[in-house]
Amino acid sequence: MTAWVDEVAADDAPIVKLLRDAGAVFYCQTNAPQTLMWLETSNNVTGRTLNPLNRDLSPGGSSGGESALVRFFGSPIGLAADGGGSIRGPAAFTGCVGLKATATRIPHTGSKAPMKGYDSTPYAVGPICRSVRDNVYFMETIIGLKPWTSEPYVSPLPWRPAAPPSASNKITIGVYTDDGVVRPHPPVVSAISRLAAALARHAEFEVIPWTPFDHGRGYDVCRQLYYLDGGAVNAALMAAAGEPVLELSAWVVSSDVVRRRSIEEMWALNTARDAFRQEYFDHWRRGRGDGALRVPTVLLGPCAPAAAPRHGTAKYWAYTAVFNLLDYPACALPTGLAVDPADPAHARDAAYAPRRNEFDASAAALYRDHGPEGYAGAPLSVQLVGRRWDDEVVMRAAAAVEAVVKEGI
Picture 1 (cartoon, one colour):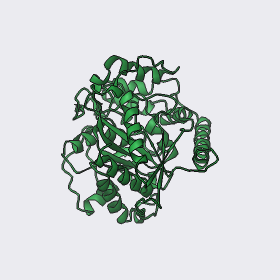
Picture 2 (cartoon, rainbow, N blue to C red):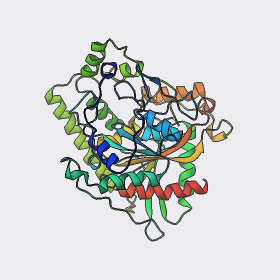
Picture 3 (tube, rainbow, N blue to C red):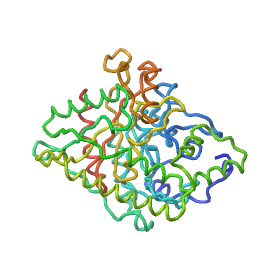
């Protein structure tokens, strides 16, 4: 926001203090999008951040500056935050590893954001790194400093390392390639299918098919909750400074689901959120529902419809945002594969008829128009998701998946 460009914080945020106490050295500030509410990174102060692997693509947002720097080996650990995918998207789009933990495990007070006090969809502070090991190191270090002793909202929950998987201690992974609303591009579907097949060949994994629960409804609740003021606070900040409103800032509040809500409407939306949480929890507990319980330990699916978005196109966040609404821990990590125009599995699907919603039509048109050539070199990543408070379980699974990836899939 240009209105804040000259402001200097009077003190470090609690998470920054903890990191300094642990020996971290801060040496630069990275880029973020106007209003923070994009899955890309561009603003009127420092401009657009590009993906280090293909400059026609975005490194994601809102923590796109962090993911670009870490991917460039400019920093071992990036400090990021995630309210709709802002850790996982950037990590996925640059081939890094990023964890959105359960929201109250890492302090987030002291941050600068327009809508202070908003908590209808919880956001989480967390790391973007180049390995699962480094993400776990970040979590162990910060939680080991007992942040709940100085921050009353932080959960007093020590880091609880999970035992590594084995043939007698399997990780059951529920795999999906499509949320039923927007079908991902062919390279994303192919990468998940190849990874699932590789995991199934290892005795420590049980791979089962998974059907996501009503992600369209969850995303609809998310989008209504994001801007309960109809975008008024952001608009006022930009107007006061005479700042041009960028395209994605305008788009995110232009939907017919975004408007100023009354207090009663906010209560109703929070009630809808809580109902969705209960129903998703029950859906997970039922497992496959085929007579054999087979409840997933974690879910494995896409982070986004595209391997990485072309600039100005990241408008569907449900693959990540639904898990913010649920407050489920989720980790993005690379498969070791990338979009390859020579791979037949990455070719356009000329026969695909988009579903009757704007998001699927847009995603399909982008791949029809640009094909694998337009996304060449973009890393193909996945998202591992666990139930609330199962952060350690997610990272145990991520480490085991990463080991399979290193063998080659």
